[in-house]
Length: 479
Image 1 (cartoon, rainbow, N blue to C red):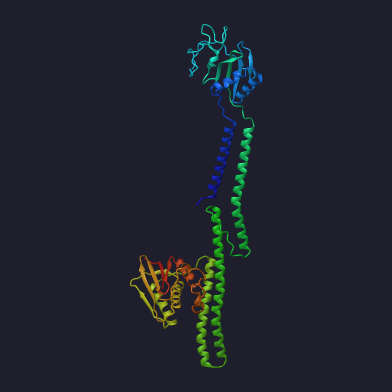
Image 2 (cartoon, one colour):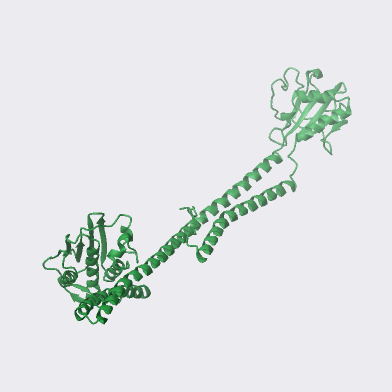
């Protein structure tokens, strides 16, 4: 499951990445920050255009302006060291003569080679731009690189042909103009936009499911128990939505079972009360024998009514108190089995009922009344859901490790796989089609489970439709 916090962190990281990408793009758009290299731009074709424009000042200024756009500052001097044109203020000065310096060779523009000036200094001397003692170059052979400060200040000194005479072109590369406030303002604007959009998307992503949860809670509070959030998320909000839906399912099921309880109680009370009324009418007519027989029926009906009311009251007390009050005593498992068998044979003499008790069973520490009620309830259920009264019911008591095990087995209708997980749910009755015949309000197994668990025991049911049901109760044995 991905948590909400981790997703918010991912959104924050994505926003930071977008902001960083925006800053990098703007930085690239502002241009490089390294100085330009004159030798990359002052190629022969550019030098040729400068020489061709030497007689037209406007064209010459335009060519120098073009170099300025490429971050090349340049100044051109004639043979008399007079400034002809420049694109920088103040103009670049002609370098002073210095001692011999190391100069790189370039293909076709050698120093001291054919057509080379043999120039040992960076600038023209008193005898002219080539100095003295060397042969005069043929200016028509094109420009010569006199100085190239490669890796230094990126400065270049070239011999050019201007006004039908030799001239000098001094050039240097400069850094890009500082971006000023434009770049930072663009970055701030983009960052603000990214953060606002991210906040809006995040708020919508979080608030929409919260609004749905609010609507669902309001609908449930208004009595619409079918309302569900149906959030399909794997974070904390999705878990909360699933819990609300599960709570609504339980509330709806609880109210449904309460309605079923009222219907079952009304049915269970109506039948014995009607029989009691008939018996009283017969007794009132003065027929003593009929009245005597009616009293027997009244006694049975009153017993059924007491059992129903007792089940309901016991369940309510356990629900309120959270546990069942026990009056424990040391009892023998065989006595519980014998008492349940005697009760079953008395109430249902036509039903075959077999009891098998293992020898040497240890005693158990249990509430005799409540624990016997568990076994009686299981035997009574086995009788109810075995329509064929000729099929036997078996009660087996044996030892299983450090526990005593009571097993009730029938060969009745069985329980479907869909209903089996819900047999211990209060008021649940899987055999609704035969509710009038079997009776009960759906609290027997619920009470049995609570009583067994109060004794630190376990109860489980295995069943197959059409084959019967087996209920196993285990409680700790006294050593």
